[in-house]
Amino acid sequence: MHKSKRISVSIDMTPMVDVAFLLLIFFMTTTSFKPPAEVDVTLPASTSEIKVPETGIIVVTVNKAGHFFIGDESGKAGSVPKEELLAAVIASRSRRPGARIIVKGDKGTQFGYIADIMDVMQVSQTNRFNLMTELKPDTKGDGAFGQNK
Image (cartoon, rainbow, N blue to C red; front, side, top):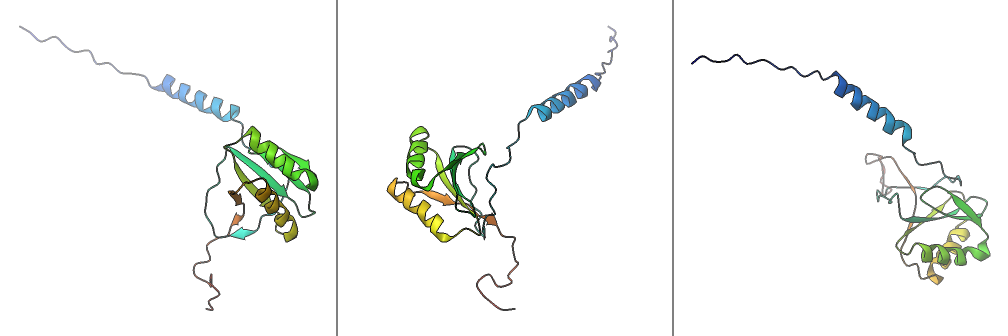
């Protein structure tokens, strides 16, 4: 008996790399990124790091001038007169009962406008909502509780 010689097989990886890059380019060009928000507000800063979900939210916004807006995670928001804010919140909650309410208020807005939103939340029996803020950079112990250096 004599041993038969094995033929070595080599696989050319070039087509697979080409396909991988084509798929990468396809997904990069067809992905829709989150559009910029229609209402531009400067959020107050805080040290809280609670992550807000990106889907399933209702956003109630008040800008510096005291105009109210209500929208969703897509960034599209419609202006709502103060007198109709309660009806708009109730309508949004009835369309999306499991959605979380996020309240965004401009840093320079008067507290009375935020108090109006909180009153609307209380009347509409929305007991759980989040106030959105910007994350403060870590100050590395330079007096977070009023301590002096």
